[in-house]
Length: 281
Image 1: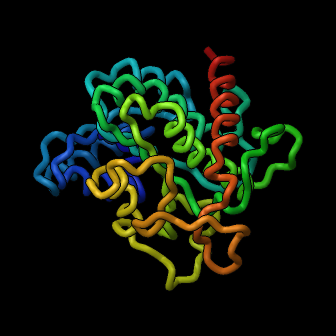
Image 2: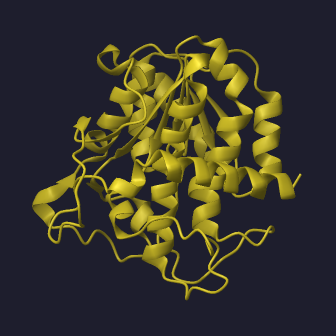
Image 3: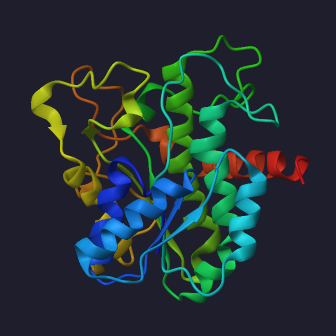
């Protein structure tokens, strides 16, 4: 199993839980030294000697390509967990892509496509995409996803990227079922991690906060539990399938917007993302 961003936040707990259950887990992270330290700690903590770390910078397609090219054997679960949030200033990759959309979605899209053969080899693989209740703040901005014309807003950029993460799961359901690959997305909830370093911490009411272990629980469920082995193209929160909501709740961000699970949107996003990747290779 591969966990991107498995060296920080809920990724640490996701990796630990999967390893404790006996999985061979690869921590894919931008900071290789930190990932190696977490892997070493997990080997002691869980008694699982197979935990590894590999370098992966999702904002750099060359790094994604190296990771894919070096991979051998099947992948039984790919947990697209890594992410950044609410960058206060507009930042772009070398391709000119808005950084949150590039890191949270496009990098994972390229990684998942590159590992398709390895996922198919597993004969029942799962792709898990960590989305967010923040997706309720906005859809994909089809005509200007990289904010060349739309005034940049940190939360809207984050919302778009997390909507795209869920639409990736819907696209995989619609395209890869014959490969035996299932894919689902999730909202981990409000967890205080370094993800909120640009927001001044969590703004969610304290009684709704979760621990990192609680935040990782839904990722672990979707990656490993036999209870959901045939579930495909769905959105989960609190270890259960979320309800579709017609408008954004004002007090608690729960449920999923209809545009996040729409097959036509997933098809359009897939084609747009593939076009972006094609232009860079």
